Length: 212
Image (cartoon, rainbow, N blue to C red; front, side):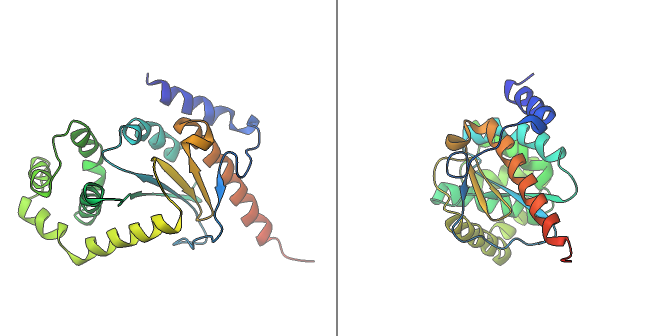
């Protein structure tokens, strides 16, 4: 079994005994929190790049972590848009989402990019064709306004969150940024994320207690 996955399973089983993590040491509290889509949920976002080998290695452990979360946690991904190669793959991500094939194509796309099998809109269109998407439909959606809008919004959010190299990185409820270098490695980001999710859960519970 992948060592990273084993680490995550152990982390999930022993979270209750984890030591507290410190702001500025293990994570960063954003100066200006960013509003999330649903204030009733605790939003966790992963920033990633399909061409990043660390993101590829992190993905299976992250998937296990997401499945272990309670119903009050909502997870989403945001692709980075730092340069032309990043933006092409970010548009690809939002194209897959718009076409309703993201869950089906996410991991195969990760693998294809890692093996340098796709690198341009043309090669990506052929890749989508191999997974049941008409290349013409892909090209039309890839150039569409909704995909352009989502890509621009992803870029704006990344800047607001202070995202920079390296990825993967995680944002918890628009308030905290976790990076592997601070958390003690990419795998440990998940333990820090669990800690911050619990902090947010407690804060929401306290806010709901009526004043006497």
